[in-house]
Each structure stands twice: as structure tokens, then as C-alpha cells.
Image (tube, rainbow, N blue to C red; front, side, top):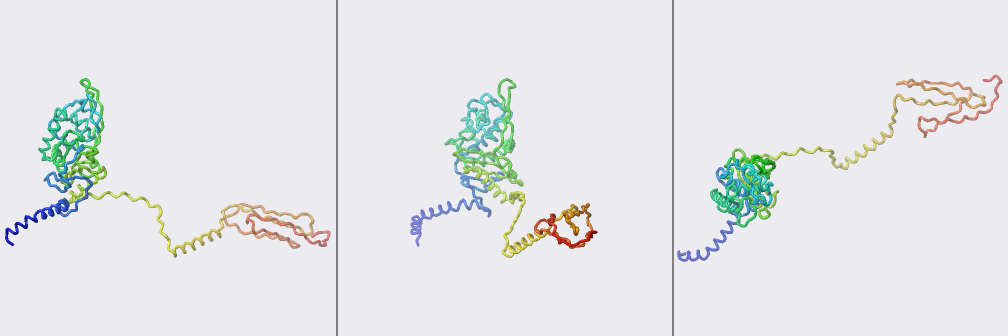
Length: 419
């Protein structure tokens, strides 16, 4: 084939090759990027996520890293960074009516009150107070709009060039957005500031809020608690910031240090709180496994005590059990339990003198205290004539004796002297 003919055919078929290559990259590109190094990438429910090594800048995992999404309160990472670079921590900051009326979440600042910049930063990062964000923004930038310009400048210096910020707290705005990659870069810069790392690594704090009246005005303490669940549940967690709005859904950015290896995870638009923390743990586990620092195995709960374990009986076993049951019943029926050292009643025997017309004389033997092994005594009664038989009812209990009526004695001739 001549060269002109080949070029003509290539120009005709080039769009088809280009389209096929593009489709192949869309299908396999993200998968190949996530499985670098032979490690299976975790499944992430969030729309966008990035796992970064802040020491080298290496991206270990990426899912839609450049997708522009609302960051919600993770915006406050950049707010805190700008404030730390422009305000002294011991600066006494006044609360304006505009800042005091900021929408929730809030730490409860009132117009005219005052607090140190350091206390307001704790309220900003732990409780995610929007009133604290606007108070700091007015102190560092003169106004919310002026502070937003400072935020955009600092973001570009950090390398976050796909982001734009309109306020210091992250409340919804069409022109307020960032990407998971940019958010990781901003957090990387903020963690280089020792005071920032100390604040986000704190689980709870008490803020001193002054009334602003007089030189030494009244004051109150406001407790705040971090929303970062990894601080209490994931080994090596150094700190982070959460965020939530109806549009942004659940967001998080944080850092973990294990075995000298630091990892930053940035997650945007996770469906709910459960998937957010599961995504964070899965990404961190995946990253540390690549460095040979797999997370420790979960602690197994102590087994519950086993009460009774019954195994189903086989036919042969069932027959044996039935025979044993019958034998036990027969044994119980044959056993007579006798209480030891219990006085037993003595039988009373009716004796009739021969030739006497009166009622029979009853001879009773008195019972004495039984011995442990009493000898059997044989008593004999002299009778000149046959003695009437005493009938005992066998059906009655052994302890009871039926008295027999005296039998009729035939009349016999006896001497006057008697027998």
C-alpha cells in the first residue's frame, strides 16, 4: 500500500480508534490507578476520595480526585490556617451581632461577648461553630468577604487550584467548592502548623467566654467535643475535621501516623455517617497495608457462657435412654425410706383367758427409746386353748394395726377351781 493511500485510510478510521481508546480508558483507567502495587483497592461509597502520603505527596488512592464538590465544614481547615498565620492566639476578639446570628452549628456566642482567638479556634475545629468562624474571619480579614479573599490566596499557595471559597464556615453557596485532592493539600499545609495539629488532635475542651462588660467582666465556660470519631477508635489518629450539609452530605479530612508513616484521607459526599467512617478506615487500612503496617486485628469479645448444649439423640440412644428411665422409676418405687431413731408404735395384742365370759384382756407393751441396732425380742404367751387369730389388713399402712374382734369360744366344762 502506497503512503498516500495509507494516510487517506488512517484519516478515515482515526475517529473510530480514538473513540475506542477513550472508552477503554474510562472503563479501566480508575481501576488500574487504584490497584498500583498489587494491592486490591477498597470499595468507596463516597463520590470522591483521595489517600495521600503527605511526606512525599504520593497519591495512594484516588476516586474522582478533581470532581468539584461542596466541602461543608471541612472549609474550616483553611479558615483556621489563615487565622493562625494572621492572628496572635492571645488576641481578645469581640463578637459582632452578625457573627452571633450565624446559623447552626454554633458554640453559643452572644453579641458583645469576647474570647481569645485560641479559644475560638477550639470552638471552630471541635464544635464546628459557625459563629466562631465569622468572629475569627472579621478579626483576621476585616469582614467575611475580605477573609474569603485571603482564603482563596492561601489555597492557591497550597496548590489547591480547583477550589473557590466564599465564606469561612462552608455554608451552601454555588461558588463555594473544592476537590478531594485540593482538600488533602490544604490539610497537609495546616498540619505543618504545630498549634493546628494540637487543636485538631484534642478530643474535648472548655472555652472561656467573657461578657465584655467592664475590665474584668463576667465569664462563662463552654464545653466542646470533637466530632472526629477516629481519635478514639483508630490507632495513630492525629486529627481531622468533619463536615455536613444536605447538599455536601458527609465529608471528612484527617491524618493518621503509624510506624513513622503518615497518611491523609480526604472524603467528599459520602451518603451517610456510617459509610463515611467505614470509607475512612478502609482507605487507611489499604494505605498502611502497602507499607507493611497493617492495622492490628480487632479485639475479639469474650465468649458468652454456654448454659446447656443438647445434641439430638439417635434412635439407638433414644432406646437406651427410655430403658434407663423405666429402671429408675422401678427403683424409686421399690425403695422405702425409713427415718433412723424414730420411735415405732408397738403392736397391741388382745389375749382372752380361757373360760372367761368377760371381754378380752388387753396386754400392752410400752415402747422404750429405740437403740441403733435393737435386738429382736421374742415373747411367748402361755395359752391353754387356741388363741384367736388377729387379722391385719395388708392394704393399710404398716404403722397401723387393725384390732380383731374376739372370736367366739366354744363352751366347755371346766372345774370350779379353774385352770
